[in-house]
Image (cartoon, rainbow, N blue to C red; front, side, top):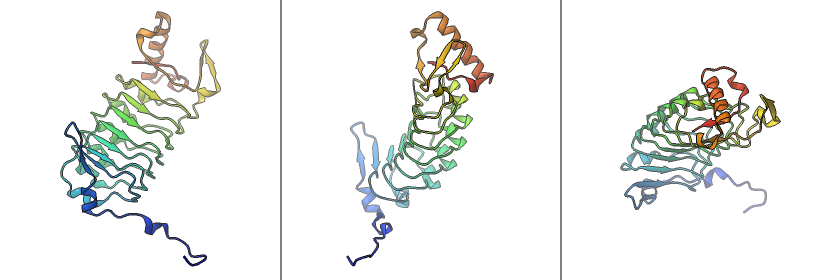
Amino acid sequence: MAKGKKVNKQTKRKTLTFKMVQSCMEVKLDGKRRLDLSYKDIAAVPTCIQKMPDFNELDLSRNLIRKIPDFIDQFISISVLDLHSNYLEELPVTIGHLQALEVLNLCNNRLTSLPSELGLLKKLHTLHLGLNQLQALPASIGALKELRHLGLSDNRFTHVPKCLAKLTKLEKLNLDRNPLLSEQMVEQNSVIFTESFYLVRESALCEDCLNKCQIRRRNMENGENAEEYASPFLS
């Protein structure tokens, strides 16, 4: 290489042909078809995947993708969509058409907001949003009645999103390493709230604590001083 010659990184990025994409299709033991396009150094979702037969899982993780094309709404049968470790700054509203989606992984991107259409994913039980730049969640997230696992770590939340009070099946919530106001250890009603947000079962609480949590939960659902509380939700 001539001295001082710059390497054009753009030329190193791959463009996948239809034949290459076909070779990435695999059939799992349970019979589900998985299209694995992770670690392909691609900056865009290959348009040729529109020609692929129906598949159940799509893995586009660990690439250089900045935008999800609108044609994603064609894959209405997929139950798992993995987009973690890319450069996404937004999601298309068409993602709300993926009615069969059960798992959505958006960790380690550059998302600053989410479309309200996420609330249309009625079968979603796992949503990973850690390592982004989110400060709030759309109120429609509260409509995800099947949601059990929600990852919100390493974002910019200063308050616990109010919509979480409506997630009655939520079992696991991760809000670690957010700039929650409660991390300064605000003492209120003789209870000290730290930066951690815990989900507990009713059976794990004494009667007095259970009553306090239920009262606070009702207050949050009614919008009364909701921002002041980082109290546990009952599963």
